[in-house]
Length: 561
Image 1 (spheres, rainbow, N blue to C red):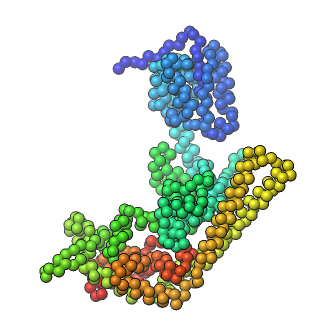
Image 2 (image 1 turned 90 degrees about the vertical axis):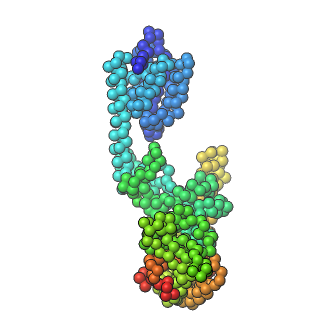
């Protein structure tokens, strides 16, 4: 391979372009490093008799990659023919690049067009020894950059563990405040922003219960609901699917902000062990957050196929083999007399044979009858319902108290904003301030938005409280049990199936003589509250964990039913 020939210095006065860079925005704002770099470079050029050309300034950017606007502009100019300058001057080689491979790549690229890279603090010639030293310096700069990044990340993770905010824009629903001062350094934390926090609570309610208890809503429906009611993001824009997705999956809202959650280069999520948990004020309860995760997980197409949603098969999508955990699917057979019948069978055995699972097969009418009759006898009894739902119903008053506290906070915030806005208006009327001042206009607009949004959110919260009906009574429980039993016996397959799913979310077939039925209290309560005409949001937290099958007495035998 041929050796790359570096351009020899000429006796003519070189034309020089200056490249000035600092690593952080804070350094750029202090305006100390860049002027000092410029001063030293200008003195160096004067001593060499070189002609100063354009200066390319890069405030607050890293030299780990080439994603730098001024850097790219400079390289584009240097590679043009003819180049407007002969030398690119830097304070040190680390200002140009902190990646040894990229450093050499660009130096060679510039050399082919007759442009040299010169450092005023690391003067090197063009001999082989100097070229080797330059490569060693670039490699050491890269190592030092990686070490600095490692130590900085370690310090930021410890800062997060102590509950302090490391910077960046806080999540919607929070705002930053100065918690303490250590010397000249301000330590900041997150606090709840009452106006925007109410939007987060609304999004979680819609995901769990829907509008007016109509049922869980998906990302698209939630975004449409918010936008139709002129509920906007922090910047005044409309909500999109991605924003709703992030809000419903962000553990910050239950009080755990995960720092160092993703790799900033690959954008891939890091293992949980590498996260630093920063405690922040919770906007929703841990139970509500987990309920949303469970709900989204079970409604995912990989968990529940869309065909099961509209199917009229009673146990379609909720019946599973107790041996392998695979789904039980409905198939058709023919008896020795020629009569056709339908049966549930293990899908794993159907696909893989006995090597995959021994398999269980149960006639459809026997399994359906066993499930329905068991629910009627053991679950849909007023006294049993009262015991099962007692703890969940008790949360009603707690929810009301919490909502009233939010309303008071929102009213107070709206009043404070209105008072400040009135003072600004009076200052304008008295001639103490001018409406031509753009900062004043922005402040008045901001206060008006806070006032209006706080009032609107308070009205919505009060309306939710007012929608609550009477407390559930033994009479309501008895009426619900009788009505549900009647519907379970009805001939309308779809209606019957919906009521089975309201109280049973999973049926496991252990053997031909034993099945296990599992459900959760809050789905049962949701159906009960809907029958009683009540707002379900106040009655508990949606959960997809088995709740009411507390003992093995839930097992039933299909053959005996």
